[in-house]
Length: 303
Length: 303
Picture 1 (cartoon, each protein chain N blue to C red):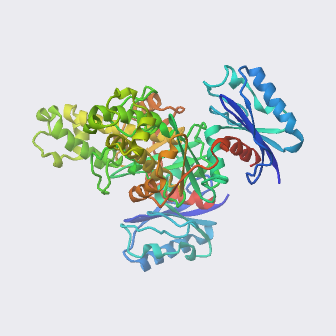
Picture 2 (tube, rainbow over the protein chains, first blue to last red):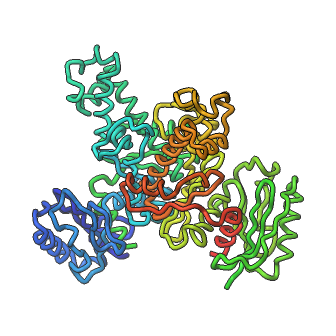
Picture 3 (tube, rainbow over the protein chains, first blue to last red):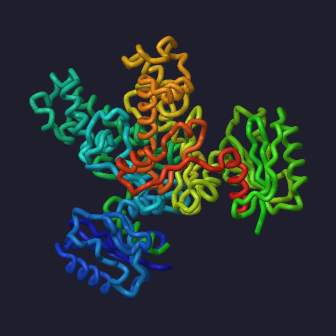
């Protein structure tokens, strides 16, 4: 069975390890800090590759940013990596074949092949953190779109009347309602409009000082205001997810990201299946988490 | 070059002809009325197949409804075809290989291979009639989803606060705002809320008596009310299309259906490209129109 070195290049850490075609980890997963210059990044990658050279067939790289059609370079800007990062041609690092893929796409592949989506035909992954990202893996293939930028689901408008400005400058992006930032926006709106705020444990806070933690903590303490804000946030998430269910007809939705632990997936699953016009879908929490990029990149390099 | 008999089974007509692998029509396209019983439909199909038997390699059937995974039967209900239609196993009609596909999917394939989407990588087709339907053909493949029901784009919610009930019983479906029915809904809402209605050429009509024709006619006559209603309708269409652009990253959107001739596609294209977070997309009007189902079915059977 062939083996790949998976390398996940993040803004803070580079994480790597050896993975076989079944997605099984064959080595300890190691981490190193991401260097601050391009030359140091190249040297670090070459060292990692050399140390594993005789034990691998191919190399898979997971990275932030959009990649080129040959999967050898990152072509978009990557704010958390040094300037000039997109000048690196990963295929020149060694004589082994290198396959570079966007980190969100790698995560979908990992979840679909060895994670929560294992055994399903069409897996929609939605990552809910500060923003919202997504990916679809259907019938053994990643859906990429014409330039590899598909699944910008965070930008889906869930209102059509320019109601709330998003940090991106556009209006009514799903992520401005249903991400971590979205929960904060729901809290601000709630503090200004819900009568429950007056008697809430959060009543002494200024609306824009309420944090996502305040709300999730308030829900645990059964604070009526926090619960109303949280329910509104879940409703916004639901609207986006039912839209994507009708659009992609997945049999599994995998939810990941910092906010996913606050979600009752069974309840959400029932709500989506009641509303969607397509067949039934399972809603699950991601399993591979921090190793998803590394494993997904390795699996794609091996394909 | 191989040849297919393409058969498009509609509620009123059965349309058929011979098509080669390049999508070129090799025979006159013939039409016959759709019979009222299952047995007569089967007899009609057998006659059509026999008459062309020696000139074809395979048979492609385009039909309303969802098809099974083997592409041999229609499995959903089809209100415009006789009861029991979904009991027909098309593969038993003759010894030639038969491939059955949903009519909307056939139309996408026809447009992507020989129509307005020819030469593009990822074609999103949106059909705007009484409702809104869709399909995506990317990198030589139709996107089907887990049970073949993907691209139910008409059900995408473009409001998240249960503002307008759709005929399907759900709220805020895109098709209740941006289809032909949607234009009528925009007119009703406009008549109740726009001051321009008082001086409109339509002012003597009851709101729910205003037709889509009244509005498109009013736009031509530069009636301020009709133009405002129409602009709102275009805005709703735009919101759905920019969502789908960010989700599928198509390089071509093909618009078809009864309402497509009222749309200024160049203006819509510019508006989408200004707003979308992914790469540029071309917006075009469908070219194959009535023959799309027949040609698409033939092309898929030949694949």
